[in-house]
Length: 276
Image 1 (cartoon, rainbow, N blue to C red):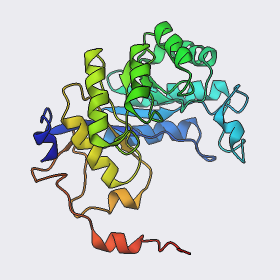
Image 2 (image 1 turned 90 degrees about the vertical axis):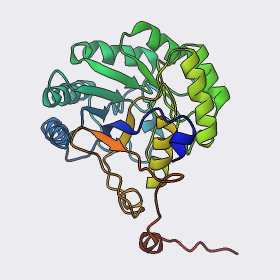
Image 3 (image 1 turned 90 degrees about the horizontal axis):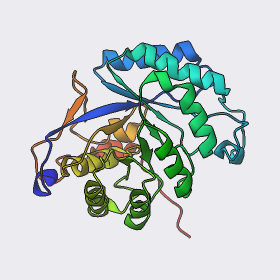
């Protein structure tokens, strides 16, 4: 297996449920019920979205065609976090992801409002290129700051790490130059004593590649497990990627990535592009 050729530090990985997305018909109660469902499936860590306040300065929502889509107030967002924590109980882990929605001051205000919710990490609180802002947030909080999935190469991660703008390093194999480049990022993170929790949010190919990456490094931690329906993740391989009852996924003892593409799925979702 590729991960073993590259170091083989883990044969099974703890995964977290990447979930808690906004929707027009999903209130605080529905979010709590959703999170409870992940516990029943064995997940020991859940991440939910935060930051969908339309009146927040510089919020990326302002660039969207429908800025009122599934938005919530600051107070409602705090209540969402409280509901998720109540569903998880005191021992399981809760992370939150702002997707670059806040200014540093708003990030600190929100974290003060949820200071008693035992947040495991805060992901992407500010814009990826706001290194000073991210460093300010990281220095002010005892909660680790994670980021930034939208950084695309070693030089950018060098700046995030050396300027202490993140406490958890978050590359993605399909966005950050492949497994080789991500391993360089991970080595730099290791030199600074930082863990790596990759961003994983695409097809099954992206998932399996990130699995081998994170299993091959000594400072690999959790693996993101997207809970959105995605046929190109759930149906793309002959060998299904499944989470066991303890919240882990095991890598297969086969050469390379260890999986076989399902040709029927490829044909079903194939798009023939027009070429002039």
